[in-house]
Image (cartoon, rainbow, N blue to C red; front, side):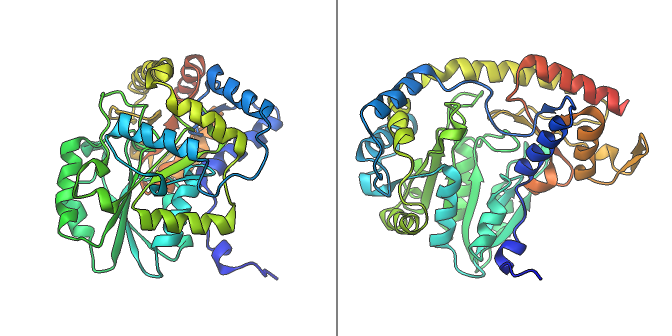
Length: 394
């Protein structure tokens, strides 16, 4: 008899983590799987950051940390916000968490009541929808298409707003599409939100530095949006620190205090050694990680060229992050090697079993016509993976 809560029974498993687990299983069986499913840079954490962690260990940082983060780290975050984003946050407005995923969970828990609606431009990061549902919120999906670079328009936002709308969550650069909202595009959305003063914005900027168009813009930079925007960031992607688990927010004082209160009952403060290392990471000039961004840009060019040679893949040029999100709906209804492809999930599973390449179905991101391919892998792996996909589909 299932004695588990309805909450956990109704919760979906993270599709990206599920695909990674399936790939690991097949590797354990001796199969040569190329993983293009996880959003994890294949670079090592830069040495100057590792050195800071070693120094912290030698200095005996081993005690509980303040729930909302070391003051020195919060000061480094404030300096980073001012330097990179032209945002003026104060110490009480910053909360450090165990990864940006916890930051998002905190926000949902302190902001949403049962039935509150959260607008999610599709595609959205895989966990947004279920984090919202965990706090009894209602995800409202706004479909976009490859023809608009997967960006929501002001008209679509206006049409999605109801009396129950409490928040809008989006990422720029976007996971999974790599889309980047320009200042003008965000201003158009802000002009809609101006008419609805009770709606709050979560701006997820974790891929901020992995931006190929030059110039990142934050919603909170607009004076009329600053007090309604929660800016979420972290070090996982830009600094190749996924396993260090440090994320943070800049938010209105009352929201930050609530997140601090919530976190104090769940995990308390984030890891002491990781926090000390992140101080060093954020104090460094962003040019210190440019070599990674340059390499991602080369890989983007490579993978788009290779995918253009496969019939049935429709791609746009992502402007940031390290994903492509091709539309593969032309394969729906076809039978290949005895397997019928009815949807993106079937297609993704077919690539895993037949091409031994792990990708993620777009259905997990709110888009049923696409798959997400991560190019946070070596150029050699990318070339081999796309070759296998081409062979399996031909």
